[in-house]
Length: 179
Image 1 (cartoon, rainbow, N blue to C red):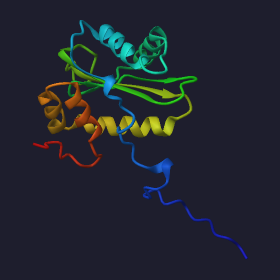
Image 2 (image 1 turned 120 degrees about the horizontal axis):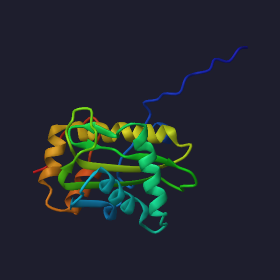
Image 3 (image 1 turned 45 degrees about the vertical axis):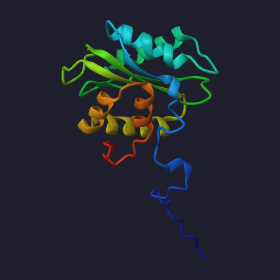
């Protein structure tokens, strides 16, 4: 008797490899900064490197900066609408790291739409974890592409409020106005 193979149901939420990516648990409150002054794209990447390298298991800031700059040389990570998602794959990184910075004033970032960047969402991903990396980039791009969502980020009064807005985002649900 011949066995038939069934394809996995990619819609199942209990399969960890196919679960939607949430920022809850990935974005620490200490890695969310509000109204930071950056003079340039390079300075913004330097500030982001500092935030991403800090924590219980610190990384070398210069190595993080070099990874982000190397990725940026392949093409700008600015996706338009004042948003950039600087990201890099890092060897020997035990787990994904994320950081968010809302700049006081936007900086030029070579975005396709020509708009300067005000929102930086930085990611460091363990080398070899491409699937989660791509899913997370997709979630963040969807989140930050929403005018309503960016308005809620603009209206946030401090880093704690920014963090709550970011981690409570649900892909496919643009109900970010919780007032």
